[in-house]
Length: 298
Ligand code: A3P
Image 1 (tube, protein in one colour):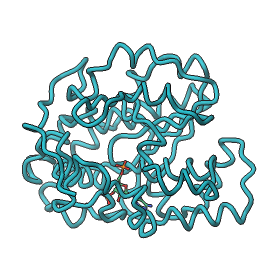
Image 2: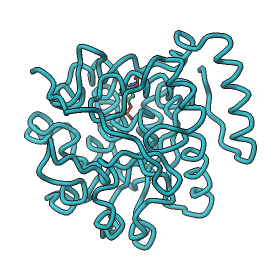
Image 3: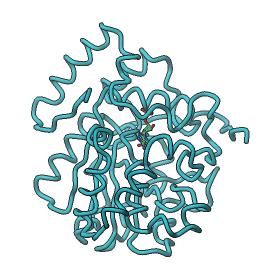
């Protein structure tokens, strides 16, 4: 299927200190008034930190490999609404409407919002939240390739200009640094938040599946856990049309696949020595107040 083209890529603008596009601010009032439920599970990430991976794990933990209808006919992004999204050119429903219309319970809901923008009902309802962080260097590389192939994202420019923008926090959903550390701070006071790392998921997926199951209070059998771990391996998800996003009309897979490499340390193939030194220096300054630690290799 040829990718649908927009007239042009969206503009990025400053929205309460965060770079955004209109796709994520047009539904702002309804978003802020969204009614969360106590059994909702919010999956929160900076873009490209492993959202789809954790979403699929949660989907299988709750709804199982056995619901064939769900697993074979509904792409993951239809099962798990992207809360702040509003893509009138491509979808007749907004993210909040999709979430309101979900027939199943609990509702699994995805967001890339920085913590300060999350609708307050999630905190009031004490909903469970799973946050996934990925080290800044691999996250930046993945975001660069994503912006190249995703027509609803601003043009990334070449790698050097992209990484300069990333260090300044000029990406959609704002600075990686504030996102990851802001959610980390939230975890210190909000006990219903599980903070995961992409690198841990790569290192031992089965262990992280168990961790998720126990956080969610599920009694997943060893056998079921192993089955899920197998289904969510990179190659399996890359071949699975319900998780690999080939059905998304605004992504151009000739430019780059959505399931691209799925590695820790791919940044080494992109950063020059000079870029790496500059990045490390800025990272030290931006992250000096937080205790969150991400691994750039495993
Ligand atoms: P790469 O571009 O580095 O390959 P998101 O879902 O937040 O958009 O994140 C997408 C990134 O997660 C991509 O990273 C993708 O390949 C990676 N990913 C998705 N599923 C994965 C899996 N099962 N194992 C490892 N990485 C995975």
